Length: 393
Image (cartoon, rainbow, N blue to C red; front, top):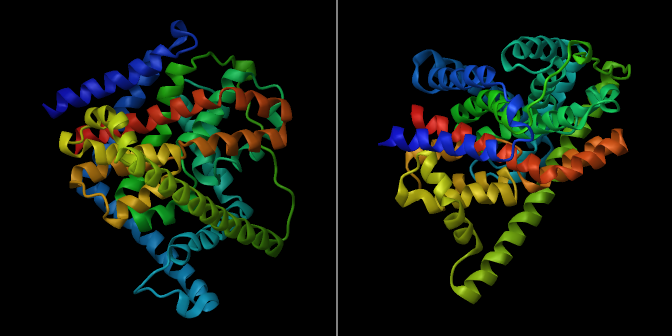
């Protein structure tokens, strides 16, 4: 029965994407089927095989080691405030972002990351039926971040048509940046974070290929990556340290605001109609949770977390999931966790549009115009990935 529900869930996702497609005749079904098969194979290998478990354990242990190194710096600065027996969210989850950002800066400075991004992107372009630029951007978004990635392709933004710009922005919203992956692993199981990273990469192209199909001509299939300004090692180090700290503080500020607003709205709804705003969202989103493979008895609670992620952000939803206030079965936790690992939320529309506008005002206005369509597609990517996991675990 669960397989019938899961297949129906996939049909629902593809149907919702097909309805809003801007040119159904141009949809390339062969790359979509290939990427969908790859999602099932890679998801199964990562979650259900000993080799996958070893790989995920290795990655998780690597991030644990990095977080332990970061903790030394945090302990030095904050002392007794950074108590591992009674961790403060800001210290244990957000401040390590500073250290991870520093490592990314070092790998960038030594030209290791640009090499990895370029050639993984080229290999990916052979599979997804899209251009080199789109493939590069998808990999770069998963490493550099949803706003920073546009700096690396700023030379191409001016002549870029809206349909290709949509795909770049869709990749940025459907993935998450490496600088905050460690923070996610503190709140949810690392194996789900790693699996979601892989599935997001293909899922973003699958949905974009349906919603926004187009043909890239060979003469337009160019990739010009902007070179970063020449810096000394320590100049670069200082810049990335400060950037990482800013990200941590910005996330902290957003959490204070969003958690406070959600609590206020919940209290207002409880006082007026006796049911919280999140419960209402849970009922509205529960059909999607059901088709993802979540048991009917847990659909409302699971759907409320998913809706919270879209309305607020993934950190708020992950905090609620990890706090134990919402009790879900192991399978439901897996499905919800996969859904939460992406930047698909309303605030990302402003972040991406602002990042593009800072580099090219005209293109930034274009992005703002298709912002809701962007969020719609990125949410479908999350539903698709979660449905696949519901079928294979």
